Image: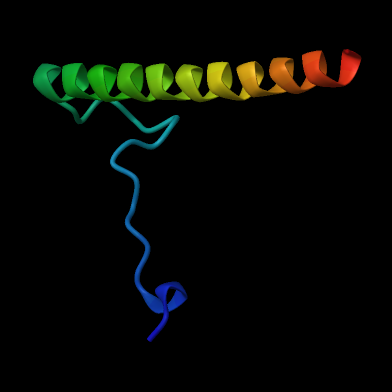
Length: 61
């Protein structure tokens, strides 16, 4: 059995999902999860940008 054969986990949050069926607490958890993912994504962007900037500086000199 390979990793491709394992069932894929469904995302906890789906963009565009109907929010009418969620409680206030669930919606607050959703916001917290999305804010955490935004912060993680921004950190990845910053790391990639720093790497790119370092490479650009190296090849300019």
